[in-house]
Length: 301
Ligand code: SF4
Image (cartoon, rainbow, N blue to C red; front, top):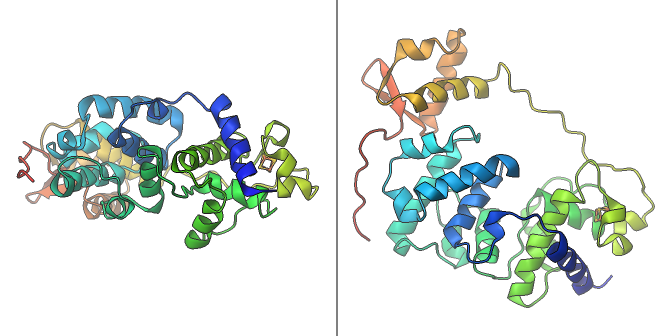
């Protein structure tokens, strides 16, 4: 198997079969792509679509979000889950305004320096918004590379530098073609080479896939138990945040006490929300979303 052939096969397949997603449309800016990448990290596409549109309707650029409060970001995040992402995204918007005049930077080191932007997100923005050649490695890509190149059914524990090198070796040299291939690898892992049920007969690299060539027929994806939610601190945090999101001012402790009967667990969940910067105490006996109230104007960069 020659490496350019692998990228070419997947890219051709992608051009004909990619899902029609709004953040992939021509002309979508770096901010919209950054927002999509943050939302998609732990949330399925179908839930992200309406949230992404609503978010960008309200905050079409980093300056708009930076001028609003963390509380409003948490409110808009709604029930997407893992709401710390909302606060981090606003922190990121503030940093973009303060450090880059409101434009999402196009240099990898500057992207990596933004709050809440990690190895994956920085490279995804550099590749998908700016057409640069960077390995964009998420769980799906690691699985595709592991199977097709290494002949292993699963990627095993993440080894970031090794994963980046393995993926980069597959990318075409030309930046735009590399960015297309990165998107294609991700899509292949998301819809064809899935963890539990790879659809090898429909795969564009079936003829060159090492795992397929090894003769293993049955899917060997990881058996992951569904995460329990009912009764967990996550559920209690969600209930507390739900009350605070709906409120227009500080919420008395007694009102929050009503959402969950276990005092210890409720107190732990509330303390966690405060530690995570999502909620703040108001006086001795009330709480509100972080920074709730009139927004403070940012100083001009
Ligand atoms: S042939 Fe099967 S295992 Fe190989 S990359 Fe395609 S879907 Fe994955």
